[in-house]
Amino acid sequence: MLKKIIKLLTRVLASTAIGIFVLSSHGAFAQTLEKKKITIAVGGKSLFYYLPLTIAERQGYFKDEGLDVEIPDFAGGAKALQALVGGSADMVSGAFEHTINMQAKKQPIKAVVLQANFSSIALVMPKDKAAKYKSAKDLKGLKIGVTAPGSSTNMFINNLLAKAGLKPSDVSIVGVGAGAGAVAAMDKGELDGMSNLDPVITQLEATGKYVAVADSRTEKGMKDLYGGDYLASCLYANEDFIKKNPATTQAAVNAMVRALRWIAKATPEQIMAVVPEAYLAGNRSIYKQALLKNMIGYSTDGQMSMRAANNVYVVLKQFEPSVVTASAAGTIKLESTFDNSFAVKAGAKYK
Image 1 (cartoon, helix red, strand yellow):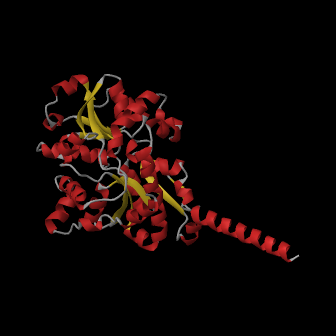
Image 2: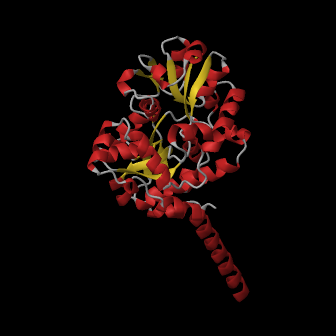
Image 3: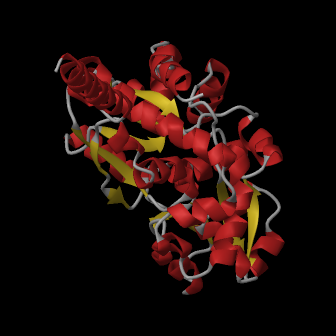
């Protein structure tokens, strides 16, 4: 009788231990989250610029951290930022440039994990116009498509113009989104050029009708355009949200760093098997070509450097009115635009 009781107790203890292990590895942390359901806004989710976000979602990494994440997709990064400012989003998967610009406007937001070190934006033009292009001075008076006015693709053009001694107002900017509509706008001849990201850019190049005249998908392009190290796409939020929800913020960063680790080891075929079929736009070959051009640009640990942040600042203070004013007043504090502590902890968890 005593042996039966001991055996029964052993089984109960074993079951309890297994239950504790499962909880600890699949969301016991969720019990400590300040907010389990969050909204992460993005502008052009299918772009490679935001691939780590899609991987974290599709691989179930957010759920593993105890998060229920909704990801509304907007036409461009500026629209996603508006959702954050308006209170309909908790976080944004967007361009680091916005953290500096918003600080200059005294609306502090902070990046908590880096997705890409490369801007990965390119300016393409029809072959005949590209043949006449010598420098950004040749853009004066042209109509240029961007994902959305005020987005990183718009800032890319502003940077080119500033380097050539021109002003943002020297061109006409047209928001065309980040998908099929952007490709269609070029095909209809409505634009003289387009600043966009992959897979859109590679889709246009593949037709043989368009040529990239400025390209930040390569190390040389990044050095020529930005001086080297750069902070591109990241996950950012209002400072107040981060302070009130540190565990929730950590959970989101954990998922993103895990996605970055996965991407670093994945083959193009493995990535294509995970992303939604719609991302491939019916052409796996072109998607793979575009993917191979962008793999070099992803962060592997989600951490940000002051040097890279300063390069972003140097670009913005050439043309962004609020940053120009704040810079003159000496009120820009780059150390307040990002926080690496979450990515460091996530890196220890997902080595």
